[in-house]
Image (cartoon, rainbow, N blue to C red; front, side, top):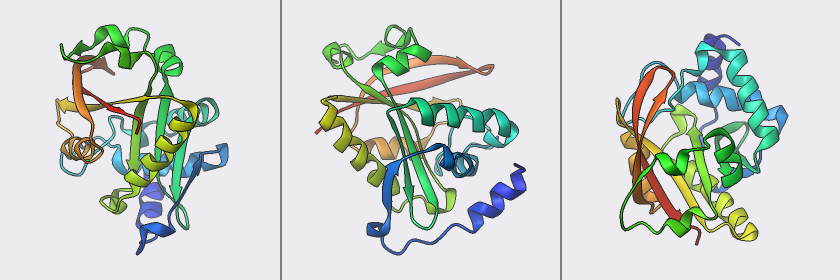
Length: 209
């Protein structure tokens, strides 16, 4: 898939007049192409702090990233898409077991707030990516995805949600604002070496209510 095709798809995305017409469901293998398009719209070489961004440049390796999304759709218990005449956004989250499979020292690597209750790490999920088509942000789509996630977590008695937000080298102010909107609290900080770059991530936590 060429970047030009991705850009054209984003430009043709529907304009939503009423968020109540948006539905959320579990992602399937058939959704991977459109999930990838969403990721490309907010994950590129340029990082805009106030617009929000994903860490990777998704258009740089189409086959690799489409394979990545296919594997996660098939593996993860909590991979959702929001749609209305097409996919508008997605949320992918890992259970504790799934997250530590890929990040085995994650808990130990975090500089935890001394007042943070470490019992919250007994049972949790990590929201790894929440992405909305770049021209559809600010319409409450992310909150709709979260609503479905929390409903499912309550049913499974998973009591804690963690999420990371980059503050260096480019701070993701849009993500920080969303953490505040979702009533996360700052739990710790982590330094990460990813793809040859050094990142500083804030670790946020919220209870499932």
